Structure formats: structure tokens, C-alpha cells
Amino acid sequence: MSFSICVAQCTDSLAATMDDQARIMQSIGGVSLAGHSVQGGMPLPPPHGHDGTDGDGRKQDIGDILHQIMTITDQSLDEAQAKKHGLNCHRMKPALFSVLCEIKEKTGLSIRGAQEEDPPDPQLMRLDNMLLAEGVAGPEKGGGSAAAAAAAAASGGAADNSIEHSDYRAKLTQIRQIYHTELEKYEQACNEFTTHVMNLLREQSRTRPISPKEIERMVGIIHRKFSSIQMQLKQSTCEAVMILRSRFLDARRKRRNFSKQATEILNEYFYSHLSNPYPSEEAKEELAKKCSITVSQGVGSTITVSQVSNWFGNKRIRYKKNIGKFQEEANLYAAKTAVNAAHAAAAAVQNSQANSPTTPNSGFQMKDEEFQLDSAESKNTLLSNMFTGSSGSFSLPNTGDMFLSMQSLNGDSYQGAQVGANVQSQVDTLRHVISQTAGYNDALAGNTMYSPHGLNANGGWQDARTPSSVISPTEGPGSVHSDTSN
DNA sequence: CTATATGATTGACT
DNA sequence: AGTCAATCATATAG
Image (tube, rainbow, N blue to C red):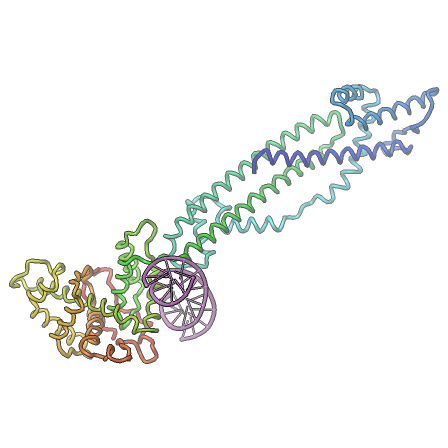
């Protein structure tokens, strides 16, 4: 919408008003010509008469004048100008003028005045409310934070999508800015136009009956015209916001797969906490952070806590539904975690045993071959102690076999990036490995599915509502602490 | 194109 | 509030 359009529209309405005035004039003329006395009290003689008498002459004169007034618009500009000048100089002009003013005041305006009380437009109110709710209208500032808050509140209160909201917020701010500049422009244009019209009318009021009331009315008309334009602006702004919103929601629905690394991290956690795969809030945060850091797939693709929750929700349900399908994956991650655990243990051993025979590499970087060659014995002992020690219910049938199994499952010499794993997770993991390799549950042989510790007969995890102890914020990754929730 | 995988959403439940 | 289960909608593999 441009200013020129506004002006054009307003000019239309102005023209319409002038037509109205012409009609009024006509009706006044009609009254006079019909021979009735006019309310002003000035007796008008009958229109037809003869030149002979003074009265007749005056009648003729007035008739002429009225005729001239009424036909003035049919004439060319120059002609009309000349006529106008003539009329203005006519001796009857002041009297006629005041009469016309009075009549007009008492007829046209009184009729119109009544219907001009405009009640607040419900549609406009709705638009205003919506803009206010969206944070487009209303108090400025906060860098669109008010808008974001409103949007967040309106979008169903999704927990933590402030990060992915940034794009939305930027767009909304843009809309908001455009809206405000346009609004200001209209306001200014409206004021300019109003003063212009008022000046025009004031000037015209010297030659044509225009009361202050009428000017007021004209101003009202202009304002209404502009406010209807403003409404269009508000409407299109609302539309824009809606489109933005739907696009935003679409974008959220349009999913992107997580990166391999992120999935790996999540899977590692899941399978290492198979007995109770319910990360606490802090754990979720930690995982989200880790995934986001690990992920180098481009800007704006961070993984949020709610996404982690989604992932775990989906994972649990899908794992439970078809454990067999996840067997391979479970093995893989179990082995990985087991090796990690072993590495962690190795590191611990190395740290505690300063006189360890040959330890050229750090424990974290050690490969399995080295692991076995270097200090397999000590680690075996340690792991075996770990399992029997902190998880009394679980006993290893054959520690040596277990390590062989791990070796075979982990032929790609996985180098654990994450060493931190609690004892419970190690138990889970190793038990899983054992179930595959040492006939723990005969899972591979028959269709009997591997039943992880914690998954009860109903298919639900025991103490599912109790979050397992997690990656402690103080200890951070690499720490080993016990999870004895089971 | 079809089947499967997977992230997100929704409603019920506790 | 967190979870489950069902479902939607898209991504991806074949």
C-alpha cells in the first residue's frame, strides 16, 4: 500500500462527499423554486414573473442566480470561474449564503450526524488482539523477546525450543519492524492529508457553505479511510505472521536425521543404561550438549533436550517392541561400552600402579591388542572385582571368555572416546555381550529375545520412573561412579 | 516407487 | 511432568 493509493482513496471519499453537497444544494434549489418560503425567514418570491415590477425582477434575478449555481459544474473551468466571480460579487450573495448555510446545517448534517457513531470494529479488535498476542503490536523493545515469549506461549508451550526459535524470532522482528514503519507512514500521511483537506475546506468555506461541523465530519471520514487502510496492513501482517508460524511449525515437523555421531552417543548411553534407560534431566542436557558439540553438520542443527527425550522415548518403545531387531546394534554398543569400561579400568589401574611394567600409551588411546598384551591380567582381575563387587546379584561365569568375546565383537579396534561409564552400565553391557557369546539367555539360538535386566515381563522397565544416576555435572565424562539403582 | 527408519506430535495415563 | 503408545510425515535405502 502506498501513500498515493491512500490519497486516491481519500480523494474518492472526498469527491463522494462533494456530490452529496451538490445534492443538498439541488434540494435547496428545489425548495426555493417550488415557491415555499425558506426557513431562514427570508421570503423568496415565486420564480416566474414579469420584468415590469421590482419584485418580478428580483424573482427573475434569484432564479437566474440559482440556475447559474446549479449549472456551474457543467461549464468549462474558465467559464465557471468567471461565473463564480460574478456570483461572488452579486449583491444577494451574503444573504443567500447565510441562508444556504443555515439550511444545510439543519438538514443534511443532522441526518448524517446520527449514524456516524462508529462502534469499535470487532474485526479490527480481533486483529489488534492477535498482533498483540504475537508480539507484533504492543510495547516495543527486548529485541523481540516479548514476541518470542508470546510465540512460545502460543505454540503450545514446547519446553525448550529457544534455540530453534531464533530464526523465527528474527523473522518476526522483521515483520514487526515493517509493520511499525508502515503504520507510522500511514499515520503521517493521514495527518498530512487531513491538514491539507482542512485547509482546502477552510478556504472553500468562503465561497461555499461549509460549517466547522462539516469539516469535522470530513476529518472523520479521512480518518476512517486511513484506519481501514491500517486494518488492511494489520490484516496482511497477521497473515504474514501466520504464514511464518506455519512455516516454522512445518520446519519443525520436517525432520532431519541426527548425525551419525549424535546417534552413536545416544545409543551408547541407551545400551549402557539398558537396565534403566531413563536419563535424568541433567543427563539429557549433557547428552544434548555432547551431541551438539560432536555434531559438525552445520549451523542451527543443535540437539535439544526435548529432542533427546524424544529420541529416548522412541528408542525405548521401539527397542521393547522388537528387541530382536536391535540385537545387532545392542551388541555393537555393548561391546563398545565394554571396551570403554575396560579402558577406563586400565587407565585407573595405570594411574594407581605407578610401577606398571610397560605402558607407553595412555590408557585412553590403547588398542585392544595392547590391552591384552600389556596388562590383561590386571584388568581381568579388576573387572571381575568390579562385577562381583558392586553388583552382587550378577556373577560372571567366565571372565576370560568374556574378554575373548569382547575382542571378537570389537574387531575394528574401537577407540573409546567416552571413557565414562558407571558400573551398572558396564554390568548391563557386559551381560549383554555375554548373553550373545556365552549363552547367557540363549538369545541368538532361538526366538527367545534377550531380556535385559530391568525389563520386566510386561515389557516395561522396572522402576522406570526413577531416573538412573547420570553423568554427574561435577565429575563430568570420564568419571566412574556406581549406579546401584538395581 | 516402495519399504523401512526415524524424528516429532498427540492423547491418555499415572 | 514424564512416559507410553499410536501415529504422522519425512528421510533414506533398495
